[in-house]
Length: 235
Image (cartoon, rainbow, N blue to C red; front, side):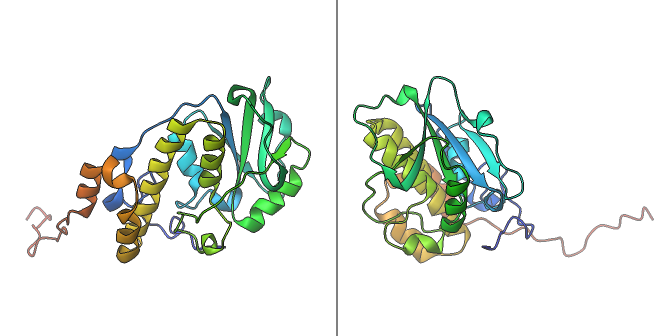
């Protein structure tokens, strides 16, 4: 399992899950969408601040999260929403039907490693329609090594492909900004400064968040203890 900086006691913002030095909450923009969006998150993913499932939850407050564990199955009756068709994004699925109405769709996203997503997919086989999208280009999610493999995209990038295919272009554009801000701050927080600079060079967040980026780039003084601490004995 990938190293969890949360488990190692790193102090983090409870909202954006970045270290306080790289907090990006000032740039948070929440979204509403006619598409119902829920996340089936592997239990191992819950503690990972890099998870884009967490990003989806804070950006789309109406989304719900269900935690999947091997020994504790999720009841599909608690997931399905009345009046909507359940879609599950999967590479082996069928193309989405033409002229699908977002207001009639419930999307369930699988959030975890590729192996974990495969386990979850097999466990929920038959829950709903499996949908495959043409996803081209290269992943912009540089916080996980598996994204270097061609054709592999993060959970939130898969969602963005679907939003674009459904004609929800404004929602897609706003979510892309939130995603790229998340990745950029994550790179800076890990000391990968050269990669962060290269990432920012062709990112739309340069124009969208100039003040926030300037504040992240500003050096901050380190707090030092006083050389002669006061005597607290009262004598």
